[in-house]
Length: 273
Image (cartoon, one colour):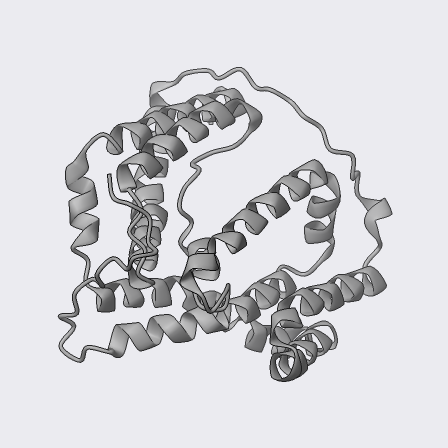
């Protein structure tokens, strides 16, 4: 694109402002609240399906690396379920370290750079507006549907305003479109996070802390991803999301007529605006 990355940053800023503006229209929240539970489940299942078949593809394409990861996950899922994914991830890291050139082949030093945004009509049309629409259609709307499917009713207005402002402020640092992230929502809001729905916020906080740690060590984290086969990373993510996929499919087919209604807000759910 003419103008390079600064023009993209300008588009990220505008996209964030559009997300903020969307939060100022309450009708959007009412539309999302009207999504039936079965439809929400089907939306989530569609998002998760491709990742959840990645372990099978990894076993076929990179069996020597994926085999120990899947076997570790299967054994621990039977005998120590809460440790299945963390240990499987460690096994994947070990496989990468043993078969790859090692982190020394990549510069692991994190660098913080601020980019002054530039503005371009082309970028507004080809980047800012599509990014806003994709974020709303593929992340925020499914993300809210996922939360509703698990019985949570957070105030959409506050979410859109805060994530929109965060997107705008984070754009000069290379960030773009902070959102509800349907897959992350499925991980932290579902029963695998905690059997008690009132305690699942711990998973969200833990995820945020982990993201901060990854950000500080972004050079090393990026090196790990670059040195590993992309399919292996997808396989580990797919294993973590199998439980969410099962719940989503069960929710999608619970009402054979597809006329399910959103679940009522339980006493432990966040307040509405």
